[in-house]
Image (tube, rainbow, N blue to C red; front, side, top):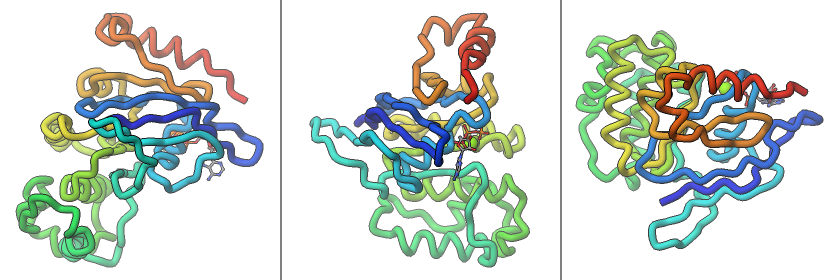
Length: 236
Ligand SMILES: Nc1ncnc2c1ncn2[C@@H]1O[C@H](COP(=O)(O)OP(=O)(O)OP(=O)(O)O)[C@@H](O)[C@H]1O
Ligand SMILES: [Mg+2]
């Protein structure tokens, strides 16, 4: 399975953010998406997930048998940088509701308690309103949504920055465990995270996507190289 982006363009009024982004993301790999603030990473995720409509270009999912389909948005799981969750439900109520509306899609349903255990939300917190959750707890809950439904494409917009080191390590391991069945794209500003978690690094620069060559990825000059690439951007 491949996620194919062809010439994606997106502008906000006069500001052209994506200028023909083209890339193929393959199943079984974790891709790190790097780019400066305002480069358009969140915009790209929004276009892939259907939150925003791109002005031009195609987004397709190519299956193993080579059938190509225009992306069906139910195949995408998106963890936002700022978690979007119903504040006036408890974590437990939210999960119960989420499982209920997605039950057709869930292959191996576990109990709500088991799910909470996976992401280590304490028992006393499970029955509190989400409104009172910390940023990291909200992010964990969002992350849990894709662990439950397992969509083929998983987009993570700077998800690990709000996690403490222990949780970040657990989530990293979880992502590595599930990656063989998914296409995972992960935006981050933390270079070290990109190099130790991701199989490939893609840079969003000047509205287009380019892959960082393998030899750069594992070289000592990785950081210097990335900074050089990102500095080239001409800010409009
Ligand atoms: N809804 C919108 N209306 C107008 N402009 C927008 C909108 N969303 C994004 N932009 C602009 O598009 C550009 C790209 O924004 P985007 O949020 O995609 O960047 P980013 O790469 O995710 O940045 P960061 O690393 O800071 O999260 C910015 O100049 C931003 O101001
Ligand atoms: Mg962003």
